[in-house]
Image (cartoon, rainbow, N blue to C red):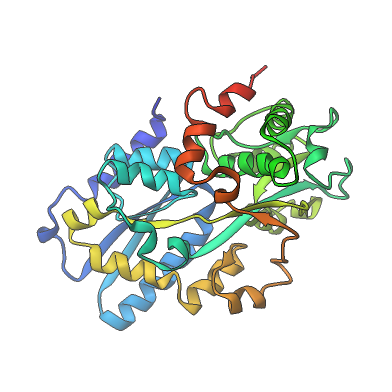
Length: 337
């Protein structure tokens, strides 16, 4: 069921482009970037710095309007009419959905460096100050005295990374899939509420003070520690976790209609520049540029052990079908009380 808020956002943003591209001011371009939940601050910063630099070098004014929400819901919004010039979503399968419907051309993931991912992230734990429950690794999350906060994998890309990180914590350390299914079933039995997106879960944990541990994007934990009340929290890095590669893609169907392909490509290329990679690191994401990452090793320390989506599920298409489609593993193990 579509969210009423989502419908309003789609209508409001789509209305900006009712005029054909030829009728728009040639000296000013407005782009729409459809992104996932936690990237609000990141893309606000990147959009402003790109617009300033582009104006100085080209004399052309560019405004980037950023839309945020659960990654899967955002992909559906584009399918429903939101005129996104580009999508910067949490997982490749959401962009593959757009590819399957003809919005994004095949081969999109090889168009830009690092599988079209200008940064990486991972899943960490956020706990109360002093870690009163002594949470150190994945096995601690299924203890009966621990309440876990994580969003809904049906609506949130970050939640799917959380699920696969938990699953892989078993299968990548010697356990079989039966043991992994048993583990995630016990974990989700410890979840009192499933928010629709990662930012909603952060709000539930930090502001509403629900739960003992938040499964979070590293960048969400990074931000929460800097926000008001962050001195009452601390991050815990588990012994093993998943490498998350949130990708970007140009929405070919839209940019060709609007005549915005060239400037959209310039924005994506900008994400790989030294300036953008530094901004990415400052917001708690891991830049793909090794030098930028090294400069921030104090706030973005190396992980002990990581595994990839390929190792845990083969591909995002396979993961989507096996774990998150109707009747998949998540539906089999999650039994809301």
